[in-house]
Image: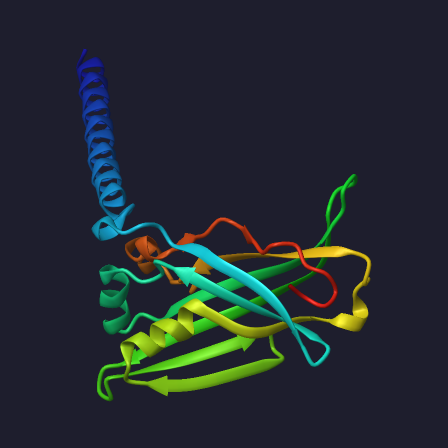
Length: 211
C-alpha cells in the first residue's frame, strides 16, 4: 500500500513538473511572439528593399549601380552605437534572358558593406569587400555619408563587354541580406530583429554594352 502511495505521489509530482514546464514554455513563446510582432515593422517604417538597379558600360566593363531603401531604423542605429557591427551582404547575379528556355545565370558575385561605430572618436569605419579580391576602408563622422556608403553600390564591375554575346539580352538581379554578421548565443536571438533579407530586384534588360 505504501509503495502504491509513493508511486502515486511521484506520478503527481511528475505531472505537476510537466505542467509547470509547458506553462513556462508557453509564457516564453508568447513573449517571443510579442517581441517579434513588435519588431516586424519597427517604428512603422517600410521594409528594406532594392529600389534601383542600373548597368552602364565604361572602358569595356559593365558597372552596376544599386540603391537600397529603408535600410536603417532607429533600432539598427541603437545597436550600431552600442558597438554592434552592422553588415549588408549584396548578391549580384548576371542573367542571360532567353525567350523560350530558362534564363541562364552567367555569373554571381557577393559584395559586403560593413560598418562599426567608434564611441570614443564618434566615427564610423566603413569597409567594402568583394570576396577576397578588393577591400576598401573609409572613415567618417557624418551619419548620412555612412548611410549612403552602406546602402549604395556605385560602379561595381560585373562583367567585361567582350565576354558577352552582342546579340543576347541580359539583366542583373540583386538582393541584400541586412546585418549578415553571425552572432554567438544568446546574442543571435537577442539581435535577431536586425536581420532581414530583401526580395530579388531586377534591372531592365540590356545588351553587351549596358543600358
